[in-house]
Image (cartoon, rainbow, N blue to C red):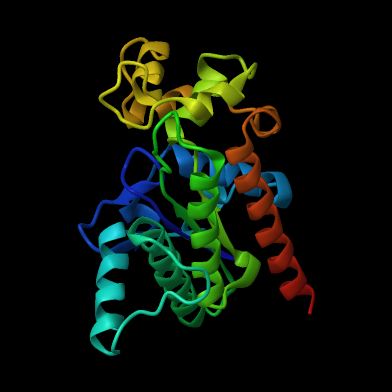
Amino acid sequence: MIVVLSGEGRSDLGACRNAQGHCSGDTFAPGPMTVLVDQEIACHLHYSPLELAPETYLYVSKTRLSELALARKQHSRKISLTGQKRGQETGYFYINAWMLGEAAKDFEQQHKDIAIAVLFRDSDGTHTAGASEWSAKWQSMHSGFQRAELGARGVPMLPKPKSEAWLLCAVANGYQDCEKLEASPGNDSSPHSAKEQLKAALGGDNSTEAQLNWLQAHGFDHEAVAANMPSYQQFKTSLAAAIGEVRSYNRS
């Protein structure tokens, strides 16, 4: 199994050290969200791929996905957003998932192995945004993976409003009453944003390294976060389904 990741930067899934559009192994610098992905996978496989087989992870940058979408558009009249009508924003989520799904299939051919694709995007939004906005973005990502014919092996990772909210559940709230964190402002300039709350909870330092160090020192109770935060539960369920499909493929 290989796991193809794409996020927004170093502070979520990570980044490439080689200044290229994709990387793996020593050229990939995992971020805090990759640690969560790896821990979820370890619950099913009973070992950590990040520790024992880091080459399992391949990272594709957001810029690279945009390049793939542009190249496809140049070779066709347009990129068709089939099915439910999508606005510009949800279309962005759809196309990113579609391109990552296509990239994952290419990696499958190159590595002669089955792939899971995980697309991380912050959902952002305002604290007044309804659940329908998050659901529309999640469904767009799901539909993009379906367009790439990746099936259940395409996993949306869409925290509400940002990844910092998931970590706050553990760092500041002790896994209690965390659902309210999903209503935190998505705008980082807000004094009550998830990012500012996490910075305060970590003693004034919410850097990628500080988040990684906290996770290494304290761990992360995935079940408790999932029980409190619907956006994490959706990710957890989707990743479990992806691993289930890989196991079915390996048995066939």
